[in-house]
Length: 308
Image (cartoon, rainbow, N blue to C red):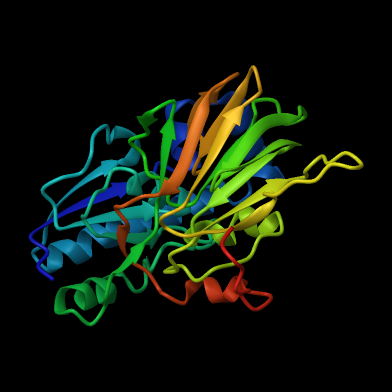
């Protein structure tokens, strides 16, 4: 693969934001006192800065043209580059993925002491070898399913790579909605609905009791959180898998509901009567990942669940 132009997108560390930019007095006080809540912040910051310097050095030594910018400064889709490199953790990778169409992506875990880096195929120690493998073709990219959200007839520009949560804006309140799959409609009350890709099945979906899928699988999954089913009632749609040609329709019965996309940074109002249609995106993310990365989370064999 030719790497003539590369974009390096990096996060700002917690230390950079709280201590250097915001100069948060409470944060600085906790740092000075050595409080346990911030003990690893400075270490993670130093690791992060070192990783950025390593990425720059390795690209320069290979005479690969690149530009580098904080992820917060990216305001438009990425174009005219051969590869996007995210430097941070999974949050940085997810944010960066929303700006890509067909350009491939490589994640670099910048701080192993503070970030798990599930999507990150590279780190400070192996970054040079990963770049060499990508250039000579010994490392392959894989298509990773993303979702598409259509809210009140308008398609959201961001394609969720991990998951979405449809819920009340107040976590202590009941989420009320209709859910429809293949013409079968439920009226439900719960604490919300998780809908995730195979890539996202190791996160909140797994914690909520969902099934871990291989990252390259082509079905997406949904699970109703804490369903409130009254005696004598029943629900057709509490959990399951959907094929690429299927979709979930959710209609809000909440005055102040929300749809959370890939974490807390993208939040869409979902008020009374609003409708969201969730389907697999036609445009997968092309990423350099370990195709077996999800296996470490599989505590049980992936069930061959019937698509409903």
